[in-house]
Length: 91
Ligand code: SF4
Image (cartoon, rainbow, N blue to C red; front, top):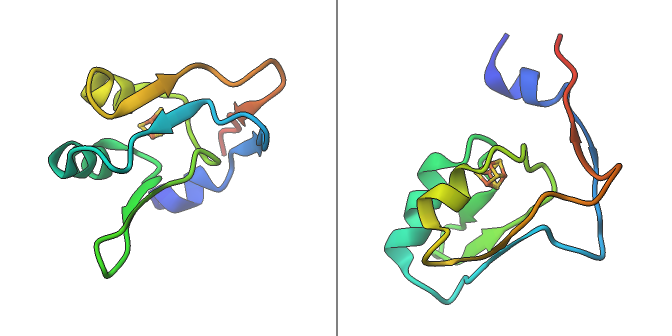
């Protein structure tokens, strides 16, 4: 079983109104590239033109991005509201 298969076991209740993480996409490129490397769910991305994007749906709430860039380009990091967010299901 690979990591993608394990990740697909998780269930997410996405709070469409409230992003629980906000990242400054206009901020430091070096910091953003750090996030691309550390996020286990690969939610920080660049397209082929180098444009940055982040999608909080699919977040594992591990806190790694906050530790890596909490004092630079991560502008908000809170746990999703009650009943929201990831629900772990182990295969
Ligand atoms: Fe990725 Fe973890 Fe940050 Fe969620 S908390 S965006 S899974 S690094």
